[in-house]
Each structure stands twice: as structure tokens, then as C-alpha cells.
Length: 218
Ligand SMILES: C[S@@+](CC[C@H](N)C(=O)[O-])C[C@H]1O[C@@H](n2cnc3c(N)ncnc32)[C@H](O)[C@@H]1O
Image (tube, rainbow, N blue to C red):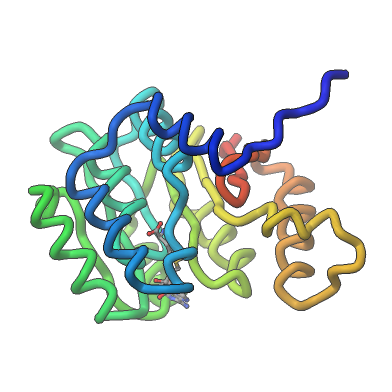
């Protein structure tokens, strides 16, 4: 078995420079996030943008739920990949961050496709469930403590063959380091085992960014 390529910063830049070009507003969000200091790490990576773009395009996805808006990069990326009649609902507990994201959505003229709900995501998802909303794709990228709850709630909102994509499942590689026994690493490890054993879906982990788990509802 050949060894896998280690993705250095230089290779990452090369990949980004030889893949679909991001829009001016996507680039602006990344610049803005860079100005935020450490929390810029919350944003998905550019390779993950490319992956989400492709998956939305090729899977005939029309309705997306995003859990964790932040400043809007992942939401805007997926909205741009949707057809004109597509819809993205994005959830975040922070009204301050939502305001920033909404400005970027308007700047890109995507505000008609994107509906933001502010509040604890568990509650927002319950409201969507009561309304009978269904989605083709759920992207989970919020508080790790609730990942299992979000996954189970999302399952109920998903159309058959729908996808749940979850970020940070490799947790900077720490999931395989037995010396790391802190709370969040353990939560991510437990979560990965849980979804892998779940007979209602089939899943695979893709090693881009901090690791994406892609789960298909059977
Ligand atoms: C990792 S960031 C999302 C990054 C975003 N997907 C992107 O690429 O730009 C996580 C977001 O989840 C939000 N969040 C954390 N806990 C939450 C909760 N319980 N309910 C709703 N939102 C939450 C945070 O406010 C933060 O904006």
C-alpha cells in the first residue's frame, strides 16, 4: 500500500490555486475571518468549500440545513451551488455573527435563498421539525458537545438518500492519539464510532480540512 501524501501549506495553496476560483465575496469573508485572530479557525477550509460546492452540484440538492453559520463562508458556498429555486436554512446562536454573515449573503445577492434562524440550534431544529421541513443535506459544524443530538435530529429531517456532512471529525488528528483523552477529543471519537455503527446510514470520512464525515441516509 502506497503512503498517503502529507498536505503541507504549500501543497494546500497549490490545490487552492488550481481549483474552482472562489467568488469575490467568499474571498472577502476569508479576509475578514483572518482579521479575527484565533477564532478564524472556526471557518471551513478552502478545500472544504470546493468539496461542498461539488457535492451540492452533483447530488441534485435543493434544500440545505446548516448548523453553525459563523460569518457565512460555508453557508454562502453552498447557497451559490444551489439552483435558483434552492433554499438554505442556517442556524446560529449568535445574532452578532448572523448580522455579519447576512451582510455577506446580501453582498453576493443570495439573501433570497438563505434563511437564518438565531437561537440554540437544538430548539431551532425542533421548530423546523414541527413545521414538517425536510432537507436533502444537513451540514453540521457547531458545538461538538451536541454533535450526536444534531446528527439524530438531522436524521429525522432528512429525505431518503439525503446526506449529513459533519466537520472536524479528525479533530486535528487527535482522534488517533491515545494520549489525548480530553473531553472534546473523546466526544469526537465517540461520535465517529456512533455514526459508523448506525445502521440507518452509511458513512465515510474524507480527510480534507479537519476531516468531514459524509453520511447517506439509507
Ligand atoms: C465552527 S463555527 C461554524 C463555521 C462555519 N460553518 C463556517 O465555515 O464559516 C461554529 C458556529 O456554531 C455556533 N454555535 C455554537 N454552539 C451553538 C448552539 N448551541 N446553537 C447554535 N449555534 C451554535 C457558534 O456561534 C459558531 O458561529
